[in-house]
Length: 388
Image (cartoon, rainbow, N blue to C red; front, side, top):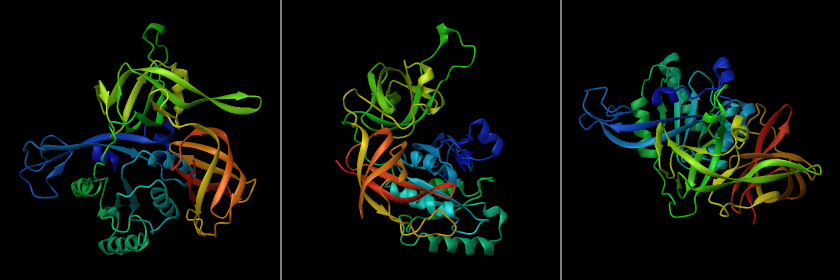
């Protein structure tokens, strides 16, 4: 679907291409245009000229897509991607019964990270009968009753044949509005990917510093300014993991395929730095925040949470009951784009304290996804809110 809208196949990793699934967070950018002469929804497109009549189309806005994995074993990666989203498109295959366990889990994840703007795409309508598509559509409506997606429009689409992509673009314009941005506050960005962009054999004179990518949530960044990355890199001291913050200079900023001098909130941004590329390769800095020195939230090795557990294990087929959290239990925690293990040291009905194996950067009010190992899988069991 992302390829149909942007022309970019968001899965770039060799294992993703081989297996045909999303493993890491994918990303792609698109510009939405509107033809002044054509009727809705045919007037919406992603090209500068209208594919219907050839008229020059009017630019509406630029958007970035974060393609999150749907597989059940990659929920922690999905939650990292959801942390930087302003809206969500929940993709449900029309040739499968609804809801599948992973669909239930992804809808819960959307709710956990606080996303309120949701669209639903009923994909693959080209491989089912009209009657089955309508029956499946009704099943989707029943599934989302009482959820954050209850009033979300359901768009029937064939991404493979690019059918109804214009209707989807229209729905994005109407339902996934660009939120108000805090541009005057201190700059802050979630890191969702980090890279070494140098190819093997690059000479020392031509080496480029490490690159981090993510979404700016407030403030702005400019080329040439100094920034801090927190919590940064794990350092082992006396059998304990401590985090070492990093300080560097921004050498370049990239938005879409364009190099810019200043980057503002909205969309995905690539930040070139003077960091040793060995620190950023293979997503080594994912989960950190980047901002002006001294302005980022504290690094937490222990956390206190107000928690709300689900009634059932929504990601499993048998939908078993969620047992209470026990003292000494180890949970997988997602805080922003960071994931870490937490050993529960104190627990009450709606409250817990935990010691983290890898410290995270966070502040009071941040949402935390709670997952428990059930069988061979980590299953989403609830949501917490960081206490001050």
